[in-house]
Image (tube, rainbow, N blue to C red):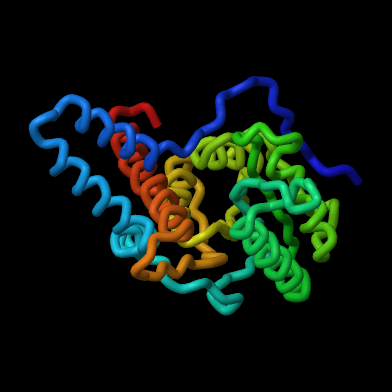
Length: 259
């Protein structure tokens, strides 16, 4: 049996994360325009970026983004029905040291968790399937869903139970496209698998399409505050700001009737 696919027929620019770059450009603009306060602008800029990189500001931002999902889920949190669908959301791809395209770290954790839950579901005796949703917003050589599929198959997911949705470029499109596939039955459980920082926005998006999903948190980021700035602090800040801005945008769009 072959895996069901949704093939992308349109080209969409990737969602580039520009939150921190935008802040940097804003400070440069203030430095250029507000000449009488250049020293103050420079000091504020340095303090802000130190606080982000060292974790003193990125940590509370990340805690805010992960609010309500501060602990990883366990199999005991899941209710398997006579039919259970696991929805795995994409989390990006990267090139490893050998130039192979592989799932990003958080995405790989989601894959492992999904495969484990699928095997538990099969042992429980129900009908189980996995929908992996993720297009190619990074414009790599392969969509996220296509890249993740071999890892799921290698961990015991049957090809006949695997559905690939490789067209969506953001969380809203994940929900929209999966809603077109699922068509849940009255006794079917839908289990949504993603990272803690991404869960609230994901639940809101799927709810907007009438899908009542159980949240399964695959992993939680644990920020650390240090004295010296590092890449981890900036990554945490970027991740948190991306999600918080995305949540605000979703709510505004819903109020305006655009979503």
